[in-house]
Image (tube, rainbow, N blue to C red; front, side):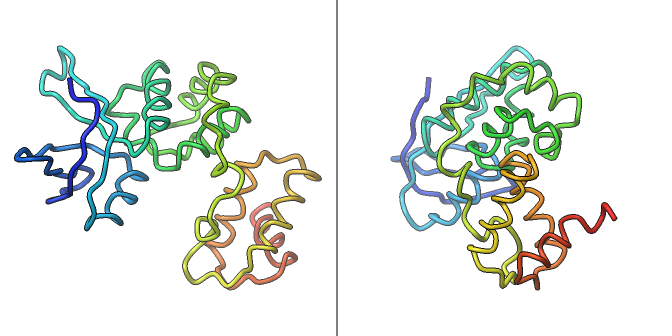
Length: 209
């Protein structure tokens, strides 16, 4: 069974890459976050931990790749949730693993239900199954997401303003860290011209007025 591959990308189609390792080319399925990361390293050799998926219903082997063993371990926990198989799980991981794990620990079903193919009921199943089991996966990325993850490339807001608003949302208004990040990102997506904390708060709560 294949558990680890090192090579270079020689092709990509949709959510699959073709990785040349030695004289063999391996077709590997990647989640959206991993795909974005490996494509940014397309000129270099990359190393992937592999989840090997084959069943009676899926007799053709599928190789699912991860940049580190932690992500693979999380994936293997994620697919223990009822109604989430490997093929659904790999498409659902549209956010970095630390953010998904943090949302599970915070019981943030609103965040989870925004993952691809995950509705409210499935989000509740994820929390019921995994809450308390994924704390080890809530790494630094769950606390401090890179600034560009908060909004569009056109956003002119400085990180200090984002941190100030996030602190108020979590410490004073009772939102989880994952919810605060989602609220800030959505506000900046709607209005990337925001530069002050007051304007950011106004945009966050604009739809509630």
